[in-house]
Image (tube, rainbow, N blue to C red; front, side, top):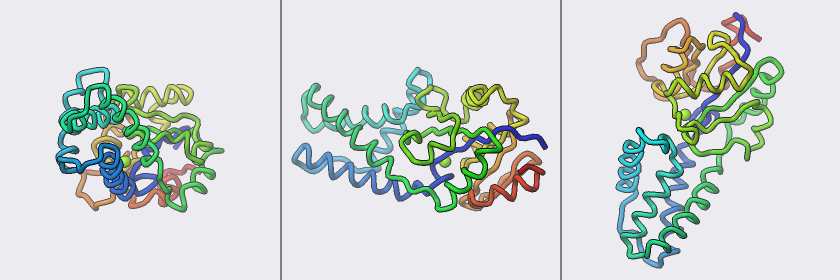
Length: 235
Ligand SMILES: [Mg+2]
């Protein structure tokens, strides 16, 4: 088949994101406690709960999907609850975001990823579509990609079809049937891509039972992507 472009999710697709987030969460608590000089009176799970709730509330606003904003707002609330003034909470929440983004970028791509992308880049237009807040432009991997989008910051978090179409257009007006998306999330990556008529490569991390169709290709690791391309008669 004719394939012109491949778009990639990044977290849990190009690297294992679990240790990144675990390290980030515990470092952020430590950092905030050091800054305010007292233990945080809130559990990590409660903060996460509040982020999920605020994220849900923002779904009908222009901040839809902006996970960095959500995190900063919840940090701000927590700081206020610890007695900081509004402006002190503002300032510290902003600095916390800088610290958080620094920790967020401590990702280690799987060892096969760089060579894989280098092999694909001469044959396909390549893009990143992430709902997270890692800026791939800051990573050495950036050189392989033609287009890099943080869907949340564009107000079109996956599974919004808009971000897929926006990306294909930015890659040079590529028709969905000539494109493939690779990602680990059934609902955010696989379903929307397949619904649009793209080939969808699902990185199935948890061996989930899901209805595969002829456009959906299941693998367990991104290193197996060349086998899918081969089976479709692509390079
Ligand atoms: Mg992912």
